Amino acid sequence: MKELFVELRRESGATVIASSAGKEYSLESDEWKNGVFTFALKEGLLRMKADTDGDKKVTVSELKAFLFDRVKELTNGKQTPTVRKENLQHDCVIY
Image (cartoon, rainbow, N blue to C red; front, side, top):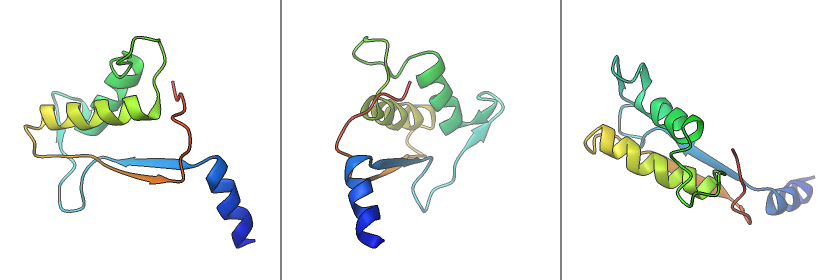
């Protein structure tokens, strides 16, 4: 069973993007009407700001780069998202 799951992860993979590093707070503000990470996520996907190559699609790598830059910018470096990848072979389109 363990080998089956390892093989499945090789083909599909997973990426987890967390709002902040372990020793940081995830900041919120009335200005954002959310936490800053959620605000940036919505901005990146719904307003397509994460589509950096202009192909009208957002990939995992585009979203990750956008979130890292935007969250740092909005918090003046006080919050930094983190990422964990598991056997991701493809940079898939997510939006």
